[in-house]
Structures are given as C-alpha cells and as structure tokens.
Length: 299
Image (cartoon, rainbow, N blue to C red; front, side, top):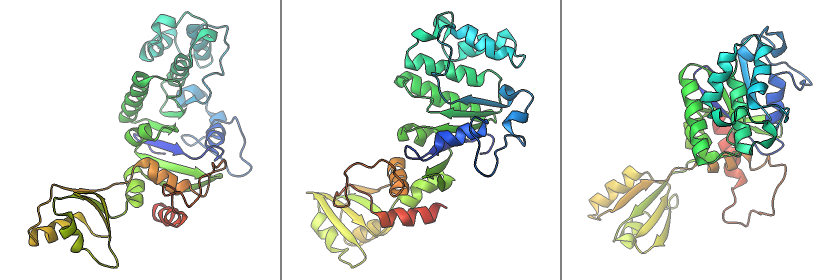
C-alpha cells in the first residue's frame, strides 16, 4: 500500500481478506512471515490508534455504552483529547445519537460509529473492512467521498468491499486474493484493461454490407439487431476507416470495455470456495482459459 492511494482488497468469501486485515493489527498470527505498519509491528507502536485506524467489525462494541462514551474510553487509552471525540462524531454524522446506547443503533449507524473509531487517532493509515455495509445510498456516497478525501490528504487507505460499483470509483489499486494467495496486484485501470477484449459495438443502417467487409478467420461479427453489430478482433479505428472507404454511414462506433465486476469474476473463476450450480454451458459463465490469461497479464 502507498500513501495517497486507496488500495482495494478483493476476493471471494473465504479467500483470507479479513484474516489478513486481522494479522496486520495483531489479532491473528501468521503461520510464517510478519506484518509491519510504518516500519513496526502494530503491537510495538506506542500509540497504535494514532498510527493505524481500523474498522473490522462494527458490532464489536459494548452495547450498554453511548457512542460518545465508547469513543471517549478509546481516546483515553491513547491520550486523545475529548475535543477529538466530538470532531469525529460530527464528521460521521452521529451528533443526534451520540448520547444514545449503541445497542439501539441500526446497522448503518453502527458502521458510522466504527468509522469514527477508526478516525479517532487521526492516523496516517486506515484499514476498513466493508465500511458501506448497511448504509443507504447517501451513506455509501459519504464513505466514498470521505475515503477519497483522506487519500488526498496523503493517507494510506486499505478498503475491502463486495460492492464492485463502489470499488470501481473509489480504489486506485487492487489486490485480489484467491484461496489465501495473491492472484492480482495492479492498478484498477490495468486490471480492467487486461480483461477487455477487442470488441466494438457498431450501429449502421447498412449492417449486412459492413459485416461483409469483415469476413475473416480472425474476426467475429455478431448481429444483435437490425442495425447493430458486435465485431471482435478488429479495432474501432480500422472499422471506421474501412466503413469510410466503402461509403457506409456509421451511427455508432463504440469500443466495449469490461466492467470491474467482469474482470474480478474472470480472475477469481477458479478460486471460489462456495460455488453455485453454474456450469460452463452457461453462456454467461467466464471461460477458465480467459481467466488464466488475465491472471498472467496482471501479475
């Protein structure tokens, strides 16, 4: 992970994401190797809350305490002033419930309190496991903007989420786990680019005439409408040039990019612990060969 960057941490259930995060802060011990934060083991920092802010389980809170008292007790362990407690309560939108018992909190309110606790020490590194879990759309947008702003301040952010739409617009870099091993470590754009084939969507009133120009062994043309073609194996520029030479008008010429979800599914196709009944006969299933090729390109 690097300062000023949001690193997304992805993987199927059981891949080892939460275990890895727990090992970073000393809650689990690795069978081999070690983890350091800012050059030290987490346990060796004099004031860990000021070094690393962590949200692992928002429900791991004494339910009889108020949000304010919970944060105040945490602050006391690292000589953090009460004024900082009030700051993070305001930052996370908990002012109206700060004096209420945590046991009555909704899942979304509990997540906000967990984020407040992670921010309490104003740390340079943040580790957030599923921070948008239970939040409404407004809350999801708030987390996204908060994470981007914190990264913009030069902080190091590690973010785990199952929401690919959120990860696509929040993360700069991705680490993907599968069965306890790293299967991808690359910028988001690179990972998506590796999953994107040379597919171009073309709309033209002269679809048959255009299709006839690309009758080649290395090119696939699929007609999905009266005026719509999907052409695989040739670039949009080449299609446009050949259409122009043939006097064929084009109403649309769009390279088709893979989504982050498609790239992720291709990467983890062979690393899913709990699989549904989808078979390779399913036209929507990911070809294992393309998954293997993608893994080689992003390693």
